[in-house]
Amino acid sequence: MTITNRNDGQASRASAGRQILALAVPTFGQLIAEPAFVLIDTAIVGHIGDAALAGLSVGSTIVLTTVGLCVFLAYGTTSQVARLIGAGRRREGLEAGIDGLWLALGIGTIVSATLFVTAEPLCAAMGARGAVLENAVDYLRAVVFGLPGMLLVYAANGIFRGLRKVRITLIAAAGGAAANTVLDVLFVFGFRWGVTGSGAATLIAQWLMGLFLVVPALLWARADGASWRPRLAGIMHTASDGVPLFVRTLALRVSMVGTVVLATHMGVTVLAGYQAVNSSWNFVINMLDAIGIAGQTLVATELGAGRRGNAQAMTRVAGRAGAWTGAVLGVGLAVIGSAAAPLFSPTPDVRHLIVVGCIVLAVFLPLGGWMWALDGILIGAGDYRYLAVGCTVTTAIYLPALAAVNALDGWLITGDTARMAVLWVIINVLFVGVRAAFNGARIRTDRWMR
Image (spheres, helix red, strand yellow):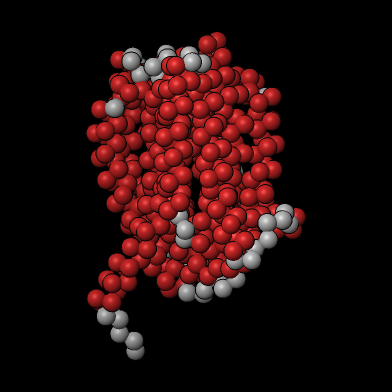
């Protein structure tokens, strides 16, 4: 019989916690890039007017949806690189990362051109009309050709995470946010380009980040003997691995687009308030997601080396870390988010709705932190199909619930305060809660490690 010393177990958990923290903090830098750009845009555009802020909500939702659908470029690459390195196949892992870069460039170019041409009908389909539609189209067309740069950032970070060289991502995110802020102020208030200036500033910042990260990624890969040439078989393998992740993310993004459509129907004031809270939520989510991705990298490496016991231990530590981080961030969001409402809008009614949304969201963040941590773990294990099924079921439940809320609006749901509260309750109870139930059920088994 083997006796495990209690102190050894505590030391092991502490070691796992330190490893997760060492990866999570710099990983957060990369994750906040796109949400930080939108948050900065929101704070600046909100002072142009409510119609501009509402238009930004529609346009940025399309951008974030598109980027989110391509998140497999980072997640899938991270898992492949980490598993191959864990198995002692470093050069192959790096070449898998290069395949991800080529795929990102191709997807980004095609998607950017498509969105530019279809900007107006897409924004109109989300319910934008009049001045809101005009601002949404202007922002989308200004920002859209920055997408290839942003997708290159996602793919490059798959390489960095797999190699555990993630500090550079923090530098890139800080530099990108600083550049975006300076250019935003210059273009919007100095040149008076309005939302178009905000989109142009983000485009430039995205490409600066992309170049800053891709160049060292290629150099590190070359140093280990990895080839830079595009390999059709490798690119197709990366793409095929990403199909279930694409389905997963598509289901989630459809849910969020449905939420914006509902907020649009509730009026300009509600939509403007929703945009400010949603931008803050996306920022906070990425703090939580950083823990999941750190766990994803570590678990994928352990599974690649055949150490399932270590992978299970990492999963438990990551889940607890996510829940506690969510609790701390919830308190911070309730306090800071409420105090910062004037930064997003000069309109008292919009400020009030921002406070309401932040408080409701803060209550549920511990659940969200736990859920996102497990989400990252399951991605690291390559359990893509289960995640795709879980997220599809979530969407199948969530969309009818949104339709029900829309039917009750004006009857049982009266007043903008109630509308804002109901929006954020349904997001957290169903959109987050159902996914948490699926992820929790999965990790109780060992099938996800196979």
